[in-house]
Image 1 (cartoon, rainbow, N blue to C red):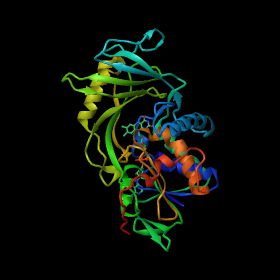
Image 2: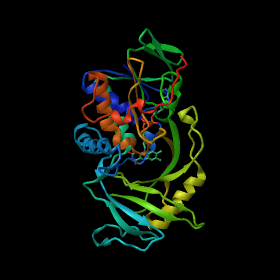
Image 3: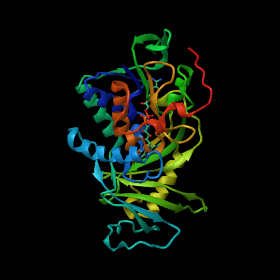
Image 4: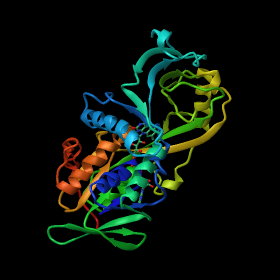
Length: 362
Ligand SMILES: Cc1cc2nc3c(=O)[nH]c(=O)nc-3n(C[C@H](O)[C@H](O)[C@H](O)COP(=O)(O)OP(=O)(O)OC[C@H]3O[C@@H](n4cnc5c(N)ncnc54)[C@H](O)[C@@H]3O)c2cc1C
């Protein structure tokens, strides 16, 4: 069993397979959590996906995060949060008296409480992904650094025979494509629909004074009149993470070639400085960019690949991959081991929902 990609989705599948006594080999081109799974916000919400096909996956995952933070035995940066809507263009509308928002002493006004500590939380995405992978390895999974270049298929009916890694064949009877936005490459190897990547920028600041456990969803009117929607997450280590700026630069083939942008950094710094004096002039600890994996309908792509026994895919988690990793990993492990998932119904995410005729080049 080979899992391609050690982002949060590949690591979660490896972890839940390992809990069932199935020791997978995880093949990762660069490093565990080197892409979006190490550089994203890590914001978790119980009910923000309600009313969409993601609702049950998100609710289940939200509960599993809380449980994992107690059972996994490693620091994942988990904590419950208050979540506020902040606007720089509207006057304050929320009753702020019970909210710890005095630290927002700049241009923004809190217009709503969007979540409380029983409905919103966070993990540190890199710590969380590494914890899953390390636990999977402790339980028997193998980690291999290498670039997956293809899937070897043979027989009639078609069956996975192995994975091509750095020019050599790694024999395997089953494979999971979990390469995030790079899963799009796998449509050359397996009958899979397109997967793309959307680029987002982020920075991490060290605030000058301690800040409360909060997530801020900000409507920001810039000096030039442009509206931006940054997201700000304070973290248990005292740092503050900001994201919410994007551009349409195409995904580079090599994950290590994803570059940040000094203009995006400067804009995020300006927004932070305008909202709170604690962030005005705060040192920038990290400047990052990463791509979230996205399918044509914005929903995850999870399930068995039609017509090729032993081939599975788990990607397309868009802006909720950290939240939805636990139930995705558990459900995929059940599908692989038992032929069906009980943790959540994976049918809304089946690759078969795309009716486009698919061809493989092998
Ligand atoms: C700016 C930003 C903020 C976000 N904030 C949040 C948030 O607050 N909450 C939330 O739930 N989600 C958030 N997300 C979404 C979340 O980060 C992603 O959905 C999730 O990380 C995707 O995980 P993944 O494992 O599918 O992909 P990735 O993290 O991209 O991992 C894929 C892995 O595959 C490897 N790989 C690629 N090609 C190959 C190859 N050929 N061979 C071997 N390995 C390969 C890569 O190196 C990489 O390690 C955010 C995303 C962005 C961009």
